[in-house]
Length: 312
Image 1 (cartoon, helix red, strand yellow):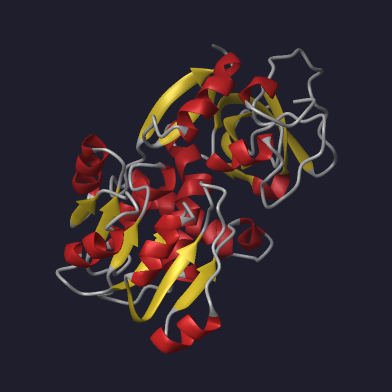
Image 2 (image 1 turned 180 degrees about the vertical axis):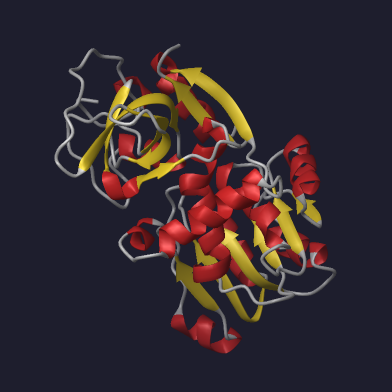
């Protein structure tokens, strides 16, 4: 990328192989992961601002050039490439039982889902949970983690009947349409007529407002994305009257805190290796089709974790 803007700013180019510094690792990339945040980086509207020129992509799976070990890594940027450099502290061995797609599904989206329950939402035993975007990368894992992490009733939303069926297959107790009109009532009905304890929300705009209205006293809504680019405002008077809470969550605040990231990822890898957690891996695109992959992601045409193949 030499400019910010629409998908057309993503151009395939020949660059020199990056050279790792003393505390870095060079990785031959076998798969690069896509995240919704990549589309915000493309327009420079993400939480962390970008500088140009830029090779986008924050996560890769591949092989360490120095040891030959299969790894997954957080690279910050530079992931949409054949080779990427990562800080040594953010490179993690992939268990033999897991493929690259599963490892990439866990490193950002899986750890996000885990921390939505444990850190941001602080979900207590038996509490009801709403997972918006339940067929996506974070959502499909959050649905599966619900009951194992102590949630009572898990309610999913997804934009098509096919995606709602997938959410039920993954372990949701109910699945509803996320259209904003009537959403408050549908969520409460799906919770057997009771207001909700916790909502994981990444759309913003009307979906956030409708979800907030569905909360019970002491209910929490965790905002971990603004896919619509429409931020919301909540009055302190409303929080007070209803004893509700709004919590923000940004995964990368966990990385600098010892144990918060590694412990979550280790648990997720173990659950996946034991067959208790299924990574829903969607399409794998050739590297040259990164723009199309981002279009498909934003247009809700995809399911689960999306990947780029640098060798294709």
